[in-house]
Image 1 (cartoon, one colour):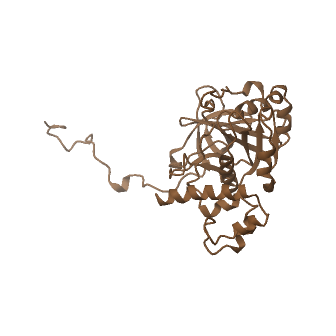
Image 2 (cartoon, rainbow, N blue to C red):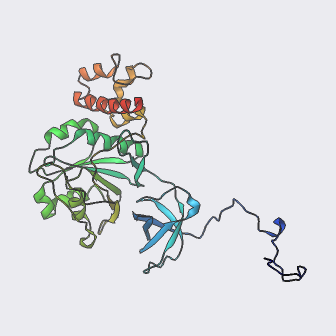
Length: 336
């Protein structure tokens, strides 16, 4: 069937324009110099809640960013509708350079790292003294991630009414890490929150901890009532807590210049993304003892100088055990 009939020389025949008549493609992208600045508060299935000045704006990532994703704490540049009104959507066109990054993997066999929080100044490692029992190796892993990512650690021990904190504090005494000890009664009266709040003023603090340690309960005591999150309980049979926090969320501290970031409870903290040679950085009490180690020492071999260093009383043997347990886990991963 003919498309145009017999008279194919008429002026109204549509023709495909030549290459010279088309707009050439370019790799030059707009700089968006007039973009507004904001802070990512939470991320939910591709939609990001961003604080722009004093407004809460919903936004999505621009395609030009590729696979680069924004996370809670990121400083971003936005264009589009930033009125904050219902059913409006802005576009994130740039993610500013990060000052710190907290990363983790699902376990030591997982090659895919996950950025949990960006631009935090401090990592509050929340650990219960009982119910559930403290896990020193999980604390060590969080310390490794904190030192590697540029965050200062803060140890928060909860439920001191169930067990004394002395043994755990002694284990980390050589690290000179700031710490706060709280009880369940103090959380209810607000005394614990006040002591923790003293460590948070003027800083962005990410809270991380095993499920059931009271992390979200503590965060709720720190923030305004209308910003509080739901909490769970510890299973009496398994001794494990229930995941009530499913996504990271940044919350402002009332009457203070500071932020807290509540993160989902963890049952493991993989370090597949961290080079084993950097793990020693989380154990500054052991670092001086490595000066006598042979070249490329794994710190878990017969000639390692750390054995004599610890035997001479320079560090707690439990710290060397934690280091070697962590390194042996990494070595098994690399050999798989």
